Every structure is written in C-alpha cells, then in structure tokens.
Image (cartoon, rainbow, N blue to C red; front, top):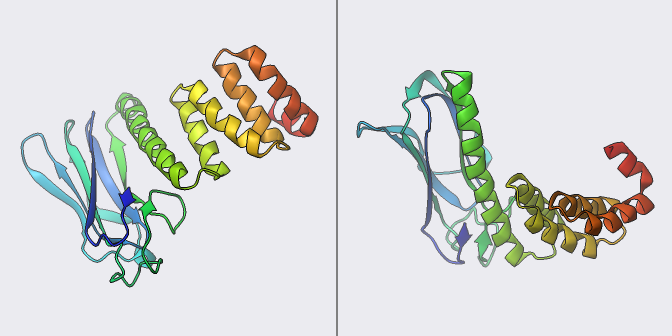
Length: 230
C-alpha cells in the first residue's frame, strides 16, 4: 500500500491459489479509516466464481468476523482474490489527516492495511502441512515489503526494524536481518536485547567471531536477560 494524498479511488488487490482442498468457515476483512469498500471472491478451477464477502461502505468502527451459516469447500487450484478501495482525499470524512498525507502500510491505525483473513479447514493433516508453510511464506514476503516501505517514511522506527529483521530470519536471510538489528543496536547502545539480537543474527549467518562481541555486550548490559533466554 502506498496511497498518494488526495487519491479518492486507490485500488489494491491480492490473490492466492489454494494448493489443497479447503473448507471455508469464516471471513474477516481488516483495514483502517481510509478504506471505502472491500470485496473477496473465489475463482474455481471449473470457471465458476463464488462471492465470499462484499462490504460497499466500509466503517473501521464496525469491522467484525463473519461466520458462514453453511461452511463450503473450495477445491485445490481455486484462486482467492481480495480487492480494497481507499479514499485518501479531503472529501472522506473518516480520513484522520487534514490535509491528507501520503499513507503506506503499517501497524498503526494512522497507517493503512488491506487484509482479508479466512478461516480454513483441510481434509487431512498432510494437506494442512502443505498449506500452512506455503501461505505463511506468502504472508511473510508481503509483510517484508510493507515494512521496507514503512521504513522509507520512518527510518528511526526501531520496532519496525526489529519486526523486519525477525521476518528476514524466518526467511533464512540472517545477513539482511543483521543489517536491521545493527541499526537498532546503533540507535540503542544501552539495550542488551538489541546487542543479543545482532549477535544471534550474525551467529546464524556463520559469522560467530563477529557475533561474540555483541553477545559479550549483552551480558555486560544485562546478564539477567541473557540468562533468562538460555
């Protein structure tokens, strides 16, 4: 998400193809104040389309989870798509900024999101074991892109850098994680947590000798914290 100020019809879409059969039980859209509408639908392999949810007048204060009266199955190969429309203009009475400003993805309500969470059940444990990591990787990559964009607007946000570094570790990219942990450690030189995180990332990248001084600093700053971790 990167919504220019004054844009009254910003549209974003996202989709995911199910690698297994899945039963849909509930759905929950999520966005913040500038969202105006949301729609989600499923394109089945046989060419038919099934509407999952449509909210034509989004209200941040009324978002909720919706449970289907009759859960239904979507076959493997179904493409699930979500579409959000945003109004970042002065005419949107729910816009928290006056005048409107550029808005990117972020965790705060003053930022924006465009999520549709769907509760799914699989036929077998093996199907779940295939679905979960595939979907998780998609979500992590999207969160990485969001955090990177957020940092361009707020480079001093240590919590964003920490979250981004953790995601890079999950993706198996410890050196990229170390870059962000190093920035946090530089900004927070008295933080045992920051030093430990940097050391752990370097250690995971195979740079144990480089990690040792940061481990030592973490012990020096707060021996109790490191003891608790171990």
